[in-house]
Length: 412
Image 1 (cartoon, rainbow, N blue to C red):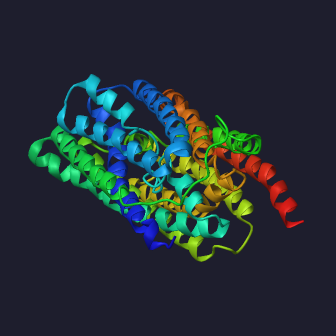
Image 2 (cartoon, rainbow, N blue to C red):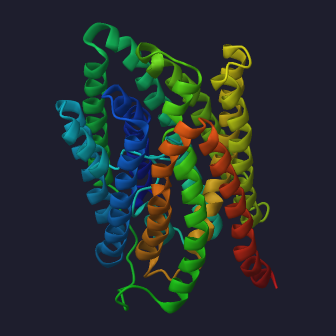
Image 3 (cartoon, rainbow, N blue to C red):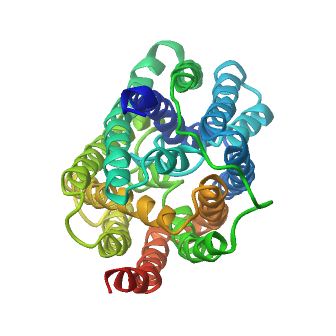
């Protein structure tokens, strides 16, 4: 089956459209909840529900994908954020807003790769492209396209501040949530044109023993990485707003422009990953990316603390934090295709969906640590960045320990 017959470009279009929407919704969600006068600890608890629900969806769609096709899993996966965005766009009820954020999977990390990976994406790429290096290339194309599109999502948040001057802050949020839902609906349509290679029949109820053992290794590292990200990232837009004392009417504008260099960074990192595919040890690349990402969180925490305690001039600190976050994103964009290729390489091809979804569930459910983040912010505002950074460094070290042996064994 040729590349064109697989509809890979339609998958790229889908990831670009959903990235614009998901990034706006993810950046806006904690700011919107705060605007609705929901406390920081309660916002953290709402995100716990988001992560648990996302974990359940991940595993369900993964198992469905193994049996009925990963394209079907992708299609069903788009329905939830469409519903969530539509509810957010047309309701001002606090209860319905919370329900929409949970079922839409809207809480979480507003990273440049957020819109790329949904249940079935990695499994579909792995099924269609058996070679490790080819998988890295394909994933890097998806990642850099989605991260470039994320810039538009951040610009939407900046536009929200302008729009709020005409229709009010809450109405501006709702209008852009509705537009985001429309974009995901277009992504839903684009996925219809994606095709996948003929797959082997499922011979086990869950997965083969070899796939299970390999998946458990990935899960152990994803738990640490997910906990680190959950503590440090979901409430970052709100954390930055508080640290730099940004007023509500200009919060969207400032946060939007803080994130734009980050998405440019992910685009650059993903592009380099594709260009350099086949060079270097991808296990070392993946593990070093996680360790460097953790170290950058700690450094960010230092400067966020300086801002919160008014120790230095506002603008230079804002530029420094923006630059550090952008560099972290370059590292993340470069390492992510290698991580995804490694995570699937030891899985039998009939188990791609279940295994990748269990791996994703481990990540998303451990991100329920975001519930702890709200309490940490109240104790010491930059504390989530310090705690998350340390955990992510440990996770990167464990990743190297677990998967370096396989790499050495394969080389031997």
